[in-house]
Amino acid sequence: MLSFRGFVEKLRNDGKLIELKKEASLDLELASIMKELDGRPVYTEKIAGLPGARAAGNVFSTRELVADYLGVKKEGLVKKLMHAIENPSKPALVQSAPVLEATESEVDLSKLPIPVHAPKDGGPYFSSAIVIANDSEYGRNCSFHRLMVIGKNKVVARILKRHLDQFISRAGGELDVAIVIGAPINVLLAAATSVEIGKDELAIANTLSPLQTVRLENGIEVPADAEYAIEAKITRELADEGPFVDLTETYDIVRKQPIVEIKKIHHRKSPIWHVLLPGGLEHKILMGMPREPTIWQEVGKSCECTGVNITPGGCSWLHAVVSIKKKSEEDGKKAIEAAFRGHKSLKHVVVVDDEIDIYDPASVEWAIATRVQADKDVIIKPNEKGSSLDPSADPHTYATCKMGIDATKPLVAHGKNFERAEWKKVDAKKYL
Ligand code: MN
Image (cartoon, rainbow, N blue to C red; front, side):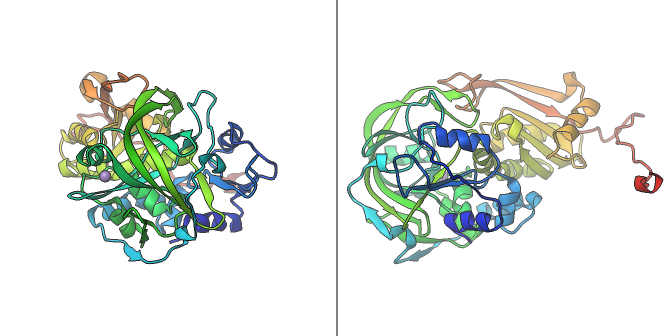
């Protein structure tokens, strides 16, 4: 498995890396350039005011890049992730590691290339940060958290009521953690999965592709070849977090969130900061795709699932298309309910038969157009708990209305034709 910088290097060798030749400011400029070049990997060592600093973004911005990296086809990614979730394995602990090549005990976050992404953001943000924490009973947890810089050695972390939040409460309100920047893709994907508490995401990463970890002084193990590993403490103190443009490309609101004190910064020589453009394609791939396996698993319990796509048009978070091999008339409806169980933030889901191309929006729309009667095939679920990222949901309770569309054809067609007509195969060129 290539490290983060190893992959950036490979992109350069393959001619896929865009290298900035002119200096860009961290204040809006760098993120805006990445937005302009969304979908194409960007690298810079010309950051205004920080000679020698390096940053990269849009690195994993297509499914093909990720699939290629993991040695599978695009369609095989979900299965590979599912296999890793079902078969976690312990990473190998090593004694010395590239990420410990250098250590800054005198912490000054203004010396790191941390961008301000959007004009109304509350400040510079760590956008690709993975927080690793330990609990005496549950073991290790690994999850993404945006971190807003509020001082030389202080950030404020957005922490939802999930596993890290439980770890903090169980520790009495204060918790030592490691913050990792520039992790390899197996770690990035594993940290974005949504598995039950007590399941070690780094063990999922290790099954995706072998992983080595090294232990920091605070006892927490981090990926050995990450760019940065930061020792930090989550405190009881709260501060305003936000606004911040997140996955939906809308500004998330300001909330009181925990302050995190940065104690020590370990990094590789000439580290590369990973800028994850909020709402960009890389963010969508890394955040949305790892939720596809849990939808597949749930749907698979009630009928035969043949594919899941969390679609970029739905912010790679709120919308999914699920394909099934229908065997009973109720399968479509069962798949809708199961999909909502498999991804709690899902708002709208379309279920289609397995001959529909779930990666082609026009193919999915064709199924909706030709196979749906709204009074029978649309399920409306008012007053459900939705996503904190959905601006149309209640900002405090996240109450939302969900909708499932069963766009599968009936098993018994009652004299109607649901099949797309097959055409005689000809080679048109011969007639030109
Ligand atoms: Mn977890």
